[in-house]
Image (spheres, rainbow, N blue to C red):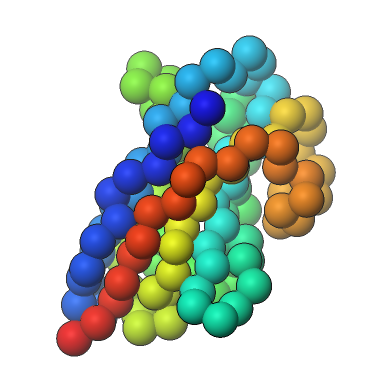
Length: 123
């Protein structure tokens, strides 16, 4: 199970940290992903991290501004978002896929999803 939290209202240029609590993960050979869906748009890839190796991948639109990390002790995956822009407004979802580092940007690879947390960037 996945439980996303940390969303809220923030001004442009501000920062926000999302967290995804992970339970029931049976193997560290898994990939955790963050996706987002803006109003009226399709859900899109944001970032991914391999739980064991900590290999990371980012969408071009967030590279250099967002940082994905995982905490073994807390069993959480975090997404730190800096220099937020109006276009970052979306519902953010965490998801998990088992297996290797392959097609991590494709949401159909992920078999378990959290409920989503809303991030609103507005002045």
